[in-house]
Length: 162
Image (cartoon, rainbow, N blue to C red; front, side, top):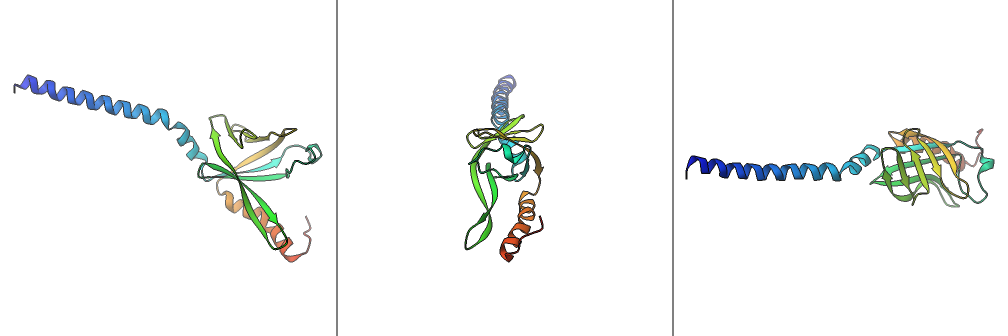
């Protein structure tokens, strides 16, 4: 085999390997922005405070003045205080997966929308309800700290001074 033929053969191998590498990088970066963006919020949470008067909430809508959400396994969980005759506990309602863009987060089949610039939450119902939210780095700790006084009050049977 002459030197020229060997150079052509290795050149073709090099070019085909390079094309495969370029194609792989293109697919990787075009298919993963959503997953990379989701990773930015994964493990974090939101503490949201009602931005309107509670008198403006329609009767029948079970919306409190404060709500907590946290993001786990690419899904949204809403933490709440569960009280029944036998126990008091912090539980979670799974709202399913979230859709994340550079401007918004949406979950619950469009019922919940967060503006990522202002961290304002809109809950769509008969009348839209608005919350101001804070991003939480350690949401489970913040959630437990928030509910602990209520849990202690309910367990002791004495009303709190709040």
